[in-house]
Image (cartoon, rainbow, N blue to C red):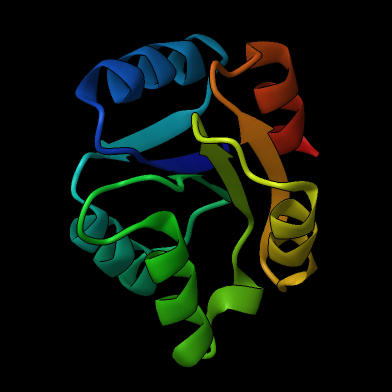
Length: 119
């Protein structure tokens, strides 16, 4: 069974994603605190990480940069998502980083999300 970590400061979104992932037979853990999410990534192995880019105080980019500094970014499968508009250049730049597998925009299309997780 695939194990997925969801990091998003919006508890409504994490709740919906958790129910969806569970309904698809995926084990999942959700956190609304980005610092807690970072610690989980450092201490546990996940098959995929769904990471919101826009969180106050400590963003998805901050998490990615922290993982990169600790030389563990390349060992991850991170699917980033955001409601903010990222430019094509920003998306390309993020996708060039090792460990970043896909970039999805909110509202998430669940079929695309599931494909990104399972591929």
